[in-house]
Image (tube, rainbow, N blue to C red; front, side):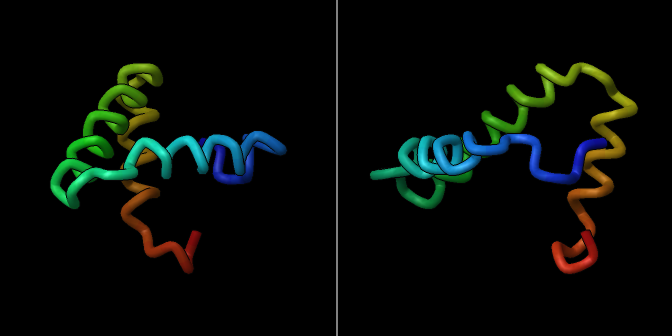
Length: 65
């Protein structure tokens, strides 16, 4: 599980692309986009044990990560 920054100098570019993808969407549409994106990324990972560990880690409060 990679919890440190793994994007390096591309992090801001990727963040900006994510924010741009949400522009003009309603809150419901934005949530739907996030859900589709999560499912697409899960499909890319394709390892049920790794996905389960990531989901468990994601449920932890950000202050404890």
